Amino acid sequence: MNKVLTLIGNYKYLIALLSVFNFLLTPIHVMLSGFSPAYVVVINYTLVILSSSVIATMKTAKITSYILGVLTLSVIWLEFTNPNSNSILICRLVFSFVLFACFCIILIKQLINIKTINLQFILGPILGFLYLGIIGGILFESIHYLDANSFQLIKGFSGFSFYYFSFISITTVGYGDITPLTAPAQSLTLVMNIIGQFYLAIVIGVFVGKYINTKSK
Image 1 (spheres, rainbow, N blue to C red):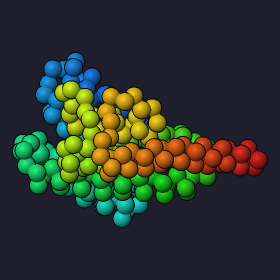
Image 2: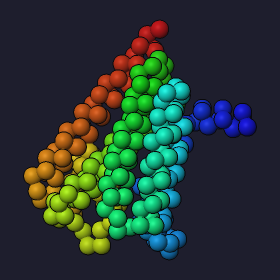
Image 3: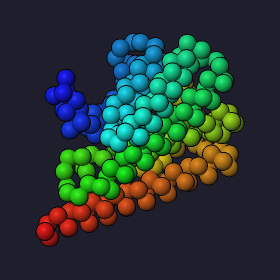
Image 4: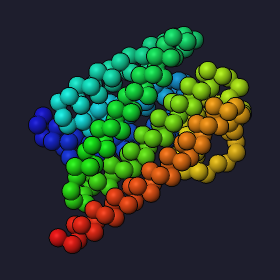
């Protein structure tokens, strides 16, 4: 058991990273498996939360992430059985946002304390970028909930479409298949565009700085 825990601790960023990539492949899983999209989304989202919860090392951070994780997972599964409940939807959006914001804070604190270039320092910023995309998806879905006319959506859209739009926003790809129509939606899109570019610039700067410091010693 101790060996398993040690292995998880050594590769916690990689485990979390793979789970997020697995979540991004949800539509492919649905296509290949033939299962209900809602069922596949719930399962993959659950894996993301469980794997991300192992990132925390400090006791307070662990307890906080576990409590938020349990609350979020409970609401997600409740929504799966009660898909038309607005109150459950709101709780899921709020808990999800707070949880992934917590993951980002924990991740940033750990990356600041890393003094050498290692696997965790390389995978950490990538994971942080993916968390940023998930947070954006939650915010875009919230905007759509408040005003159903906020976006011009593709035919047969689902909740996954907001995560797709979030990632093409922070990478400034902008295919144009999903378009923000209202001022709040456009404003949030601009913010995500700017944050995505600043994130990349800051991460590259920090990475190069630590690499230079490591080589000069």
